[in-house]
Image (cartoon, rainbow, N blue to C red; front, side):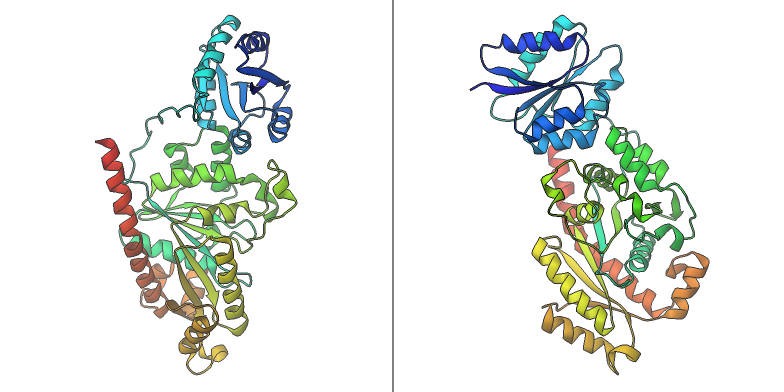
Length: 421
């Protein structure tokens, strides 16, 4: 049976590609000649082809479009131009399976032969990655720690900021990412008033195939020793700027820039069932879901009042149902006797053990004066009130996170060393 080919090639090269496909001896057949990316994606989602031949300069062709093609089971073969090598590099960065330079329209037959050679048991091998423009901070990629919590403002951002600051205080290079698309405020908490969100700019660069370590370093300024900040979107209506396909690239580059990536996420895990049928439509909670899926450790934050504990129990159940927190640490914030009884810590631990099956809980005492002073000055708790009881608990949590991630980092480093040998 002939393999369907979706042809989205501009100029006179298109006719040469169609003729070469027709001369493939029945192995290939052009099933749709597409005028633009929209028609190409529609044909792929309809299952009309298994191979797409595209021009490197096709309008609106980005990483998200290539990701949609791959999820539809379509391999992407790009036609580059030797006179414009940056087009082929950009297409490779978008994730194309094969990029072939075509000097003249008559050379299109070579493209078909290359595609036929890659139509064996699996897709063509990916090209080797480009050399890093900046030295990698670690021999192996770093780890990602996602900070999540249910609705009700349990203190996700506050925990994420101070956890990242404590990790940096352990001489661990850290990148703090604000991936909360509902109420991102990491930059404001640290006193960084930046109107240009770094995460949105990084996602755009990833979608265009231009995000590398140097670009990510420019977008994430140093706010403390060993701590960089990738600020989030300034308004909730800007969530479409953070598609899942681009965030995956941003997180991958972030793990190469820092030993630990701490990501503050939104509260909502809902996935619109109607939108899942349209693979091109952006997902409202893509930033949160993508970050949790790629996290090596999830720090789940809840508040110590009766409503907050109930929401935390339900949130833990929702994480389990979705399989998003295989490795997690539960943190209960603002523990105080005025709302949880004479022995608030024991009451919270007992409730979580009984209703959620959680045995290990990190209890952060409520230290409102120290937290308010840090917020007023736009600094981390360790800088303003190093003796605060809340700060001491977060410092221990940071040490425990490093210890929990160490075996994984050692395994990744051993694997990388084996590959290099």
